[in-house]
Length: 183
Image 1 (tube, rainbow, N blue to C red):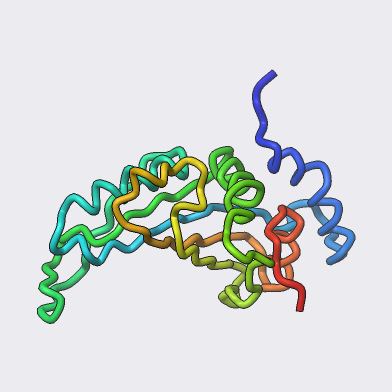
Image 2: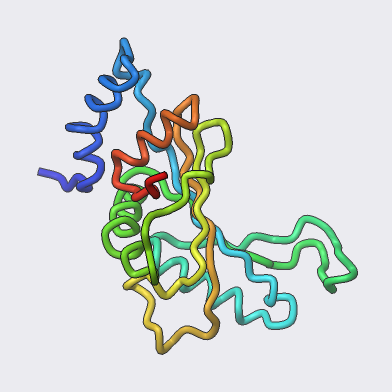
């Protein structure tokens, strides 16, 4: 018997039927699902110190369980001493089982470690069923050793769904366990 992530099994068993009942879908293929999660981190100080990109790559790889890649600048900006092709950020695109594992760890272990946490804001939707979440400190993840952190920095997490509307996407992510604030 092969391993299936907890949230993936929960999606198939409970979430599909709950969303079908809520939005009265006629077909199982109409039910929105999570396509991918993109975790990105801008490292603007890497212009001066190239080692910061390596630290960010290492941290993001530890957090997500998948190798991170460096993102390069697209054009020159003289005011910031930035040249085209310089590494200025890191990102990871998670799909499949790793995506569900990361979401599970985010909801159950990381978000509860945020100071004064009472839910995430529901205004991060883009109008097409995708949700963006900003994290201010990378030390909320249990995989990060606080003693080895060179600089506290944040990251952006984008949840890409197949939902057509923000309401459907919010219901999907809420069913998967994202703790949205109550209005």
